[in-house]
Image 1 (cartoon, helix red, strand yellow):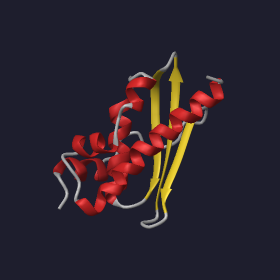
Image 2 (cartoon, helix red, strand yellow):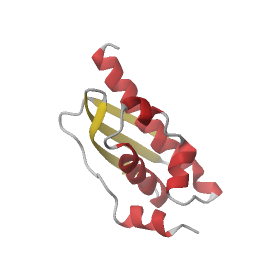
Image 3 (cartoon, helix red, strand yellow):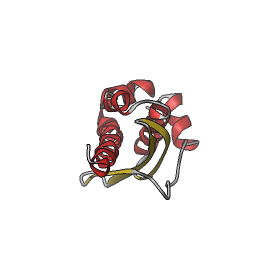
Image 4 (cartoon, helix red, strand yellow):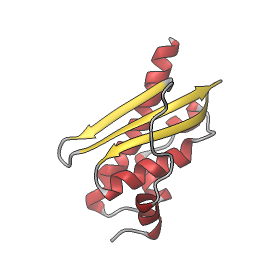
Amino acid sequence: MYTDKVMDHFTNPRNVGEIADANGVGEVGNAKCGDIMRIYLQVENDIIKDVKFKTFGCGAAIATSSMVTEMVKGKTLDEALKISNQAVADALGGLPPAKMHCSNLAADALHEAIKDYISKKGK
């Protein structure tokens, strides 16, 4: 059902936690499945220097949160904004159709954190 990469990111998630002085935070949830994701960014000169997440949800939600943090660390904000829901799922080797909404949450939480950073900077 799940790829080895999904299982790896679920059982050994990367970048779990909070950034106390995060300058961008995004939170999204899906009431239908109960998943909630929060992504924390530390941005310097429009580069994502650090990223952490806290996710309450299924294995796919945790795996997509972990993967999206791996995908954006060191990227510019513009590069990170181009990461789509499908790109997250593809990076994990695919998700079952019933779990695709989980990848949507990961990209959405990332985009919300970037929007939060931009609004705090007054851009």
